[in-house]
Length: 319
Ligand SMILES: [Zn+2]
Image (cartoon, rainbow, N blue to C red; front, top):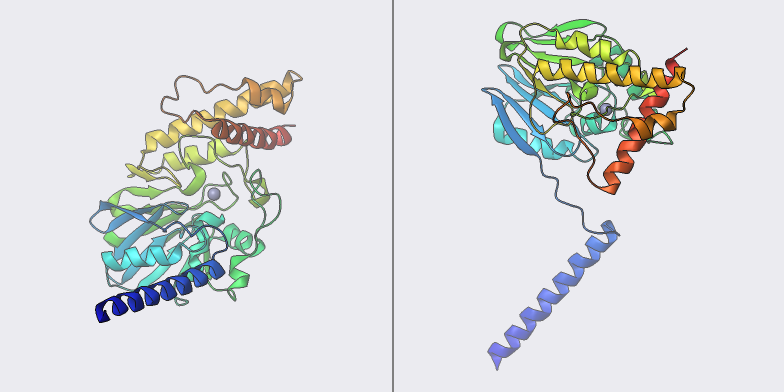
């Protein structure tokens, strides 16, 4: 009898707690519960990691005097990055480098300690303050996450063409080769490891965004990344979104792919065709083996929209 009572009381308590937590969850998250934010960690070298998921690929470099992080993913993904870093090293995070202004590469900045030094190419500092709509992706400017956080996470130091952080085996070379994906794309070279983070200048083996709202270009894109592909003493590339690393040869081929596309668009314009004609007639040449081809309707639509946006940028730049 008493046992039965206890059981009932326990059940009642559990129900009450369950209802309470359900109530709280329903209050905070009117829609479905959020998917867990899983950051996948891949060790590239002794002190260099690539963190995947939640936006652009993040690089973590553990140096003697602290940790440098390259790119910080989408809003809400700063803490999951910090949680993974804690498992890697207990050194302080001293530096963030953002490869460019896009929200899926910079938003986590606001979740890092306010003491962290944020470094970007000087044009990117301007774009981060402006928070412009990404061309071909957003029709209205996104809310400025830095303003919303009292300016936290905004860059305080910038470079123009070239800058080196640290020295010797721990040197990080920062380079700018001109506009491509945006007007402030930084190439981050971990010198001793021969590894270069190229951000979204080559996001994957597929069409990039040519974000003219943030200084990006269509016609100049290929030439800019061809310069990056020639950086000496690099054998491994971290891409903005590719799940695996690539090589300078891949970057060079990507530059040729984009140059071919520019030619295709310009020929169409010369022949009196339209941007829509470009979308329906473009076929990725067979020499670009392994390049993404859409397989679902959603992918086909996304790909057509991307080609259309890129073709329009090139079209408008072609006099
Ligand atoms: Zn981007």
